Length: 424
Ligand code: AFD
Ligand code: MN
Ligand code: MN
Image 1 (cartoon, protein in one colour):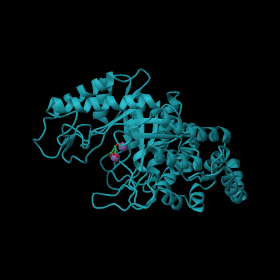
Image 2 (cartoon, rainbow, N blue to C red; image 1 turned 120 degrees about the vertical axis):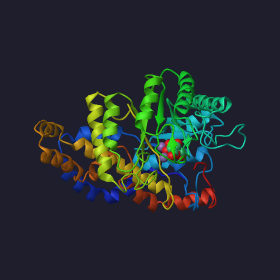
Image 3 (cartoon, rainbow, N blue to C red; image 1 turned 90 degrees about the vertical axis):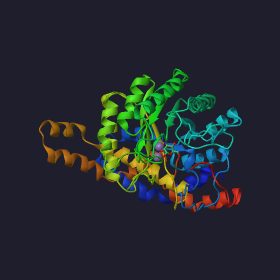
Image 4 (spheres, protein in one colour; image 1 turned 45 degrees about the vertical axis):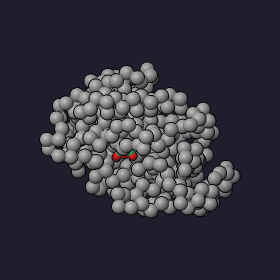
């Protein structure tokens, strides 16, 4: 399915007058609008290949139809998103779900859609049909050396696929851990995992990064071998300068102060990547900004402050990815909403009056500090985000256009009603 340029222009024309009124208002209220628009245009969020189909739960799955049947179709779906919002210019692949049979063809196809390859993800949390040894009791932590070796080899293979596609990072998320007290020797599990990660690290090309993703619980429910940011940071520090912590918003115990975690990881130069999603209870993988938008704003506020204090490039120095799953929404619509929520929150964080906030902090003026943050959070920046999108050639209302063009209906016609995308 193609979205023609002239159709986007027609769609934009119909919304232009209202948009211009809103943009004129916010521009009048905001300092440095051009600078903000440039930053918004540069900011790209990678879409995970595994979020293009309906995820379902362990109880059931209700596919909407037209799901991508292969890597080519996944790239086409993300191409559609990027065409609409001009902010989804990257794809994050999961191996073995997305092994490219013809890497140069895949690379060219992605380039046609304006997409680059973000972090590659390995999978040692499932057994594949042709796999010799089982990960039932963990992968890199496993008491059996040959299972550990199999997991190491898999990660190195993932790096190889990534090199062929022009990716420059590997995300390692392990489901390793234990379900019952006594099942595992924590120290040995850590040491095995560390030495496995060291072997994988040694296979990284010079310009590559390794992201060590942590998760508090699930699928293991007593202990997780990379359970929190402290453990991830410990691995990343021992591994070396190419290893970083990856923060997935859904991977904390309830009420964790994620903004503080982010601030300290950035301070240490050890924050590498981000998985955006939202949740109320755990690893819910819901639409970004749908449950706790103020928390997301506070996180972005720390990201902007922390990156600026280190002179980092907002758009390129961290890996920005979505990690979501869709049970009741059309996955593509959900992803459009998620990207929009990220862009809105980023724009709000750029609006924070840093000088005033610092002054308030130095005077222990708690009330002003809160006012400064909430002033930015309560500003309606949607017209700024829309203007950045408009200038980049995207649609003023990505979801409006998606529906008007009947994208899902067309994908169902092309691919069929009963298609199932690979992934979780
Ligand atoms: C997991 C993690 C991790 C992993 C993904 C697989 O968030 O990022 O790659 O789900 O679908 O919960
Ligand atoms: Mn994740
Ligand atoms: Mn997760």
